[in-house]
Length: 108
Image 1 (cartoon, rainbow, N blue to C red):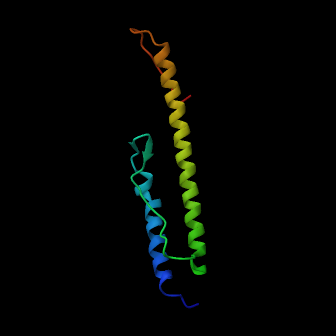
Image 2 (image 1 turned 135 degrees about the horizontal axis):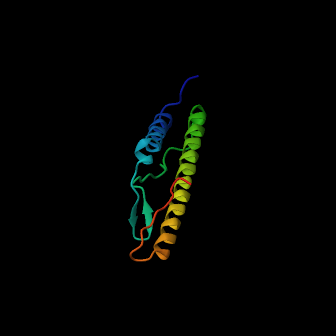
Image 3 (image 1 turned 180 degrees about the horizontal axis):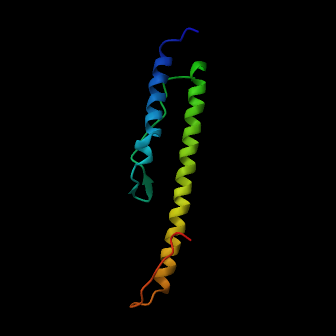
């Protein structure tokens, strides 16, 4: 099937960029606080001039969306885990006597 020119090539570049951002660079991005917002350092804006996604690229876009949803799930899991750890640490800090040893079972 012949490829349409112009926006097809531009859409390829956009999908390449999104796939790169979904890779290890985004997964390892350090969160920073900007005012009251968290930022991953990944700043992406949807291009306005491309028009509709070409039909030939729909499956690739679907796979990219699936990858993004998986990354969101991983981030939510990590957030929940960090929240549970923080809760345990806060419990210890409020119950701890100044000169008593504290042990925390992190595996059970």
